[in-house]
Image 1 (cartoon, rainbow, N blue to C red):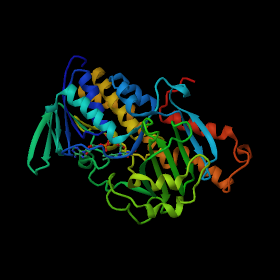
Image 2 (cartoon, rainbow, N blue to C red):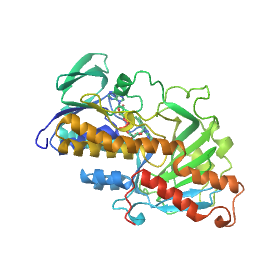
Image 3 (cartoon, helix red, strand yellow):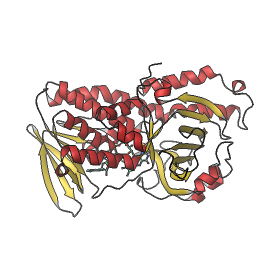
Image 4 (cartoon, rainbow, N blue to C red):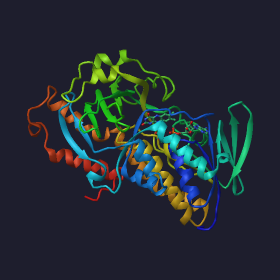
Length: 417
Ligand SMILES: Cc1cc2nc3c(=O)[nH]c(=O)nc-3n(C[C@H](O)[C@H](O)[C@H](O)COP(=O)(O)OP(=O)(O)OC[C@H]3O[C@@H](n4cnc5c(N)ncnc54)[C@H](O)[C@@H]3O)c2cc1C
């Protein structure tokens, strides 16, 4: 099928959908993207792109632009709630990867991808304010039903339709109508950004605390002329201990832009003063504060239905642990574009994409439910809640090393040493 250029429609102009658009266009396909939002704004706060996702974006010629706006993360440090370092995992080039890990503003990344797609595909192929409601297969074509932001309805037909329409995917709902709302694990996250002096080396991501209360912090933009840096932070607090099925559903429908309140954070994090960072001061200086329950969905038995498939959060929403949300969506996009080049038919290509990606993403969903690498924090909190003099008295570094290696292998890290 190498020579056959397809008409491909993508539902959703998020990070997954736009990366797919660029990867498919680069292989000669005719791509259109329907994005529900009438006008994209730089929504969200910080995210991390792991090196294997950065490699994909590099292949699309985007590395220089990304490097100008992001921070090349030097390490992920696990610390206790007193800020004492437990484990330092070198990241990016210094960690033996072929590419940097990038900490970046999610909304700015989306806008960059949108601008590139507008340039490469042509503006007319990016249909903003067009929500995909449902789709049907007609012979070898797929017909998508759209609703414009003014309420009007229309249809578009294509050879393939990719549902990259996020955690509330309309296409996923069409195929799995009984699935219901995302599952909540009882954890709330407050995500904020503050402009502040760089901490540590100005390139480190830190996760401090334990399963009931955790503080994650990393810079997401280069240091500005005034010496300040945009710093992303997340306060996680467990509001319910019973996890799934405890009788309560997650608080209201998830909305990444729902404002949060400092009053919910300071009683827990107000006393977290580290040698290297004043947590309450950073929280208080927030320029943006958003609230979000930690939700995911069960892995699906399959993504492909005829000539329609799912990608990114529509296919495998997962807890934002281990920097995998945007990373796995980008890897999906790359895999799908490659599969379409190699498959004998579009259906075979979609099956090959799914065979490669679905089991891996399902494993990450499961591992994140078991807290991913955060399990390290709980071990230390259990054994030394008041802190430690020597880490070796609390935990064997080999125990941590084994946990880290297992998680990274499952998430597909490609470390050369
Ligand atoms: C506004 C917003 C803010 C976010 N902020 C953060 C953050 O701060 N930190 C973090 O870790 N993750 C954040 N995420 C999630 C993160 O972007 C994703 O987990 C990850 O990037 C995977 O991306 P995706 O493209 O699969 O899904 P998303 O990023 O969710 O993109 C889906 C896109 O599809 C559009 N859409 C939805 N339904 C339809 C439809 N029926 N038809 C057409 N278009 C549709 C949405 O408007 C969106 O642009 C945010 C997502 C959104 C939408």
